[in-house]
Length: 282
Image (cartoon, one colour):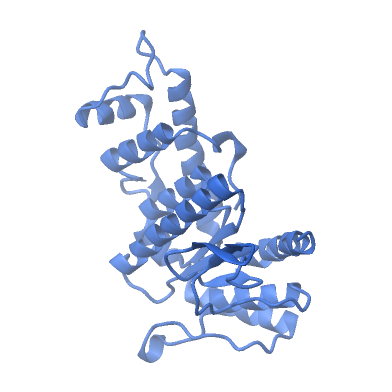
């Protein structure tokens, strides 16, 4: 999923309003499993309850200001895209296994597939990671690609170290040394709750995005950053509030795209073609 251009480049205080209002009133409409759309009155009450002024979102007559209208529009957009587009893309492990098998057969891939980090009966191939690896490997036309980075992402200039990211990513093209693109994969097919490890994954993506934003703004070096996630139960049944934050991060510019579940099959080949064009131009 690409960001909606209407909500790119908005000021930091816009996202502060989004986060604070969402946290105060909640992300989900009770009893519906749908993302909540806070009304203008909800937004006013939330800011007042937090001891903050509403003058940014309301004009002198108490009507939505231009800022407030855009804020309300974003809440509508976020709810609609999650309820109508993202939720159907998320898979359980049976669907992921079936799609993985289809992809492997169609690509005739002999690539080694990593296992998930579960134990006992839950220890299975990492279906989403496997699909990502096979699709990229098939599409990258013989170019190197690091599917299991054992080193930090390093950016150099004139062979001198310029930046090093704080943590390892899940994949890099063509390598973690001056990559064209990096990605993180969050698949949680066998988890039974939305635990702290899953929440930490969202914050890790935010950290990487902030580091890459700093690199882009101060050094004019653009490394594409992608988040790839799946598990209907974990993300939708248990973690809808975190899906809202993921959509927020996407529009804040901390990730270039988010691929949800089965979306990888169609979108990932298109992205690899773009990476190859960038690599060719270097």
